[in-house]
Length: 200
Ligand code: 5GP
Image (cartoon, rainbow, N blue to C red; front, top):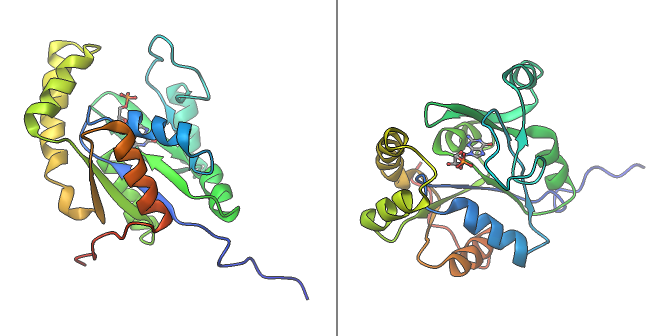
């Protein structure tokens, strides 16, 4: 008799979201460095690479046409227009493969994407990365210095809306210190720390 796919082997998907500039990417990078057992999704995006960004590592940088085709073929688990500019999306197949192989899998995506995943994969764990304070978030946003004034204002508006979404999440990790936040995230992913009960 052939064996059915083992339910124990299938691991859980974790979605990390939070306001812009809170440090989601930095926390995910810390997890990548210290926890090679965790699989982290590489998104596709239509935005242009920043200096130092590597195709296939930071993102898959694709054209609008390529992105349209991926949507049409149903290849994206979720996608969104972020900051009213570029599109970002999560390729579906690698996520499914990582979960089927029993690897804890992590998506670092924006709030719109997190809400889509909550619809399609309600069993996933949703973790909100919060700043220590609003003032600190503004400082980080300005400090990054890679955006124009207009873009920064737009990102602040989005960040305020995103902060208000915290109660939708299963757990909150405050990013006061990157490595500590990464360890807390992994503790949630592996069940060493319990999330709060869901409201609905
Ligand atoms: P950045 O352009 O600064 O790398 O990222 C901008 C925003 O896009 C971040 O908030 C990041 O979480 C979000 N993002 C990155 N990849 C994805 C994705 O695959 N889907 C969605 N919905 N958002 C993403």
